[in-house]
Length: 150
Image (cartoon, rainbow, N blue to C red; front, top):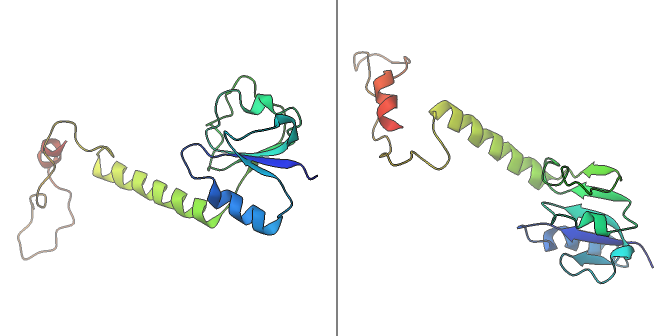
């Protein structure tokens, strides 16, 4: 029997990760957390925010594959096994990270929070212009307008 794969994808559905593996290697056992009949059978773990201590219960683990862009979701677990950590690259992950970075840049430029202003009404309309209506105004809005929107 081939070594098994464990998918612990946190809040994400695991089937989009399991299905292509099953298509490519139908004889490979795949377990989706919390379905883990034999921890010793697991050779590879595909994880996103795995439960604390889960990876330490896999005695024959050979590698951990991070299903996200980083590894901070599990790297600081005190009982992390000393096995290689692999970064998964996929078009979906690249697209989501591009969207996240774009959002962060927009938030920075708009000087706001993703949750919106705390207890204040949102900004309405355009910032007041400091130039005549007939000219193209590329100057920033007065600070007072931004302060009223926060």
